[in-house]
Length: 167
Image (cartoon, rainbow, N blue to C red; front, side):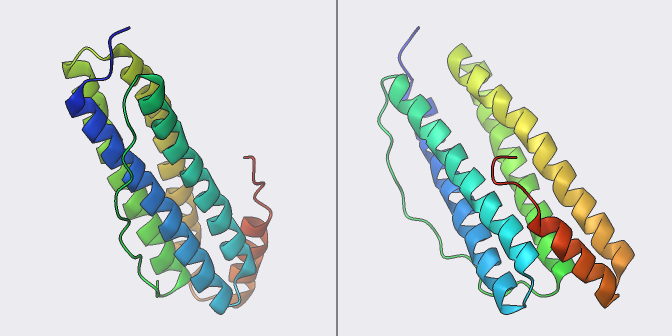
């Protein structure tokens, strides 16, 4: 297997930064949900934050496994306020769609460079992003259906709070 090319290494390091930002963003969202007394939403976001940090480490490890050097870059501060529960999950969906675009660009670069090992790694992420977007879309659809009904929002909060950390 050929060593990791400089261009691919740089692009993968950018992805590590994006995944770390994702974790940071979801942690900020969790803190916001706590202040809104939506502990189930907060739990869901904390689980999501841990998952994103795991994604960052998966890319980080790949860089090292291929003889490259992970370079940690500054992480932008996330917002502090996310609006209504619907606005919050619309932001989750938009963020996941952006991550999908990033993964697809990385996959295209790996294909262009005939980097089969990176393509294999990135295929896992492509599949993961389908799940991430589908989940966010389903929650957005549910929140739109719920509207301002407090009882329904509390039921959704309870459901989101039941998310397993290993799921």
